[in-house]
Figure 1 (tube, rainbow, N blue to C red):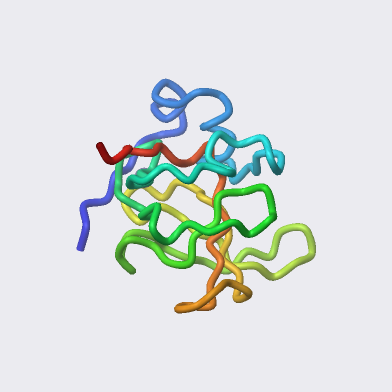
Figure 2 (tube, rainbow, N blue to C red; figure 1 turned 30 degrees about the horizontal axis):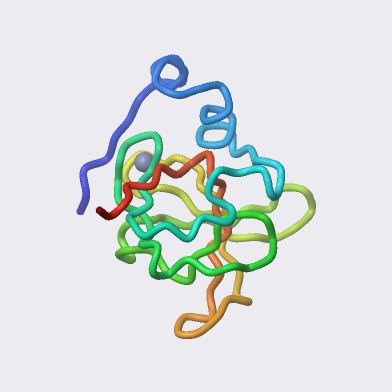
Amino acid sequence: MKKKIEKSAEEWKKDLTPEQFHVCREKGTEPAFTGEYAHSKEPGVYKCVACGNQLFDSNTKFDSGTGWPSFYQPIESESVATAEDRAYGMVRTEVMCNACGAHLGHVFKDGPNPTGLRYCINSVSLRLDKKI
Ligand SMILES: [Zn+2]
């Protein structure tokens, strides 16, 4: 069981940019094709921008054509948490950082092999640790 990070909204506001706060803590979505990592193919590990938890390996990133970074699996099943999201009249599965609860994006069942999953993640929620 990983250590959980809990901070108040005020504390998060101090630690995050307004854009990061909006996506991670208010479940916002960055506009498609605007994110820093939408088309990135650089090798490395994508970490939670809020707490540094390792989330996705660049090996599992694929071009989904959606305009958001897309992965077919998290680094470990424990890296992320999921929850049902019924906002905007849709039933979707929300993906969160399992360490700090930051909203990352959603997971859909139309991804490629081997998992058939598509983790559709906001660039704003991620920080790429590049491999040297
Ligand atoms: Zn986190």
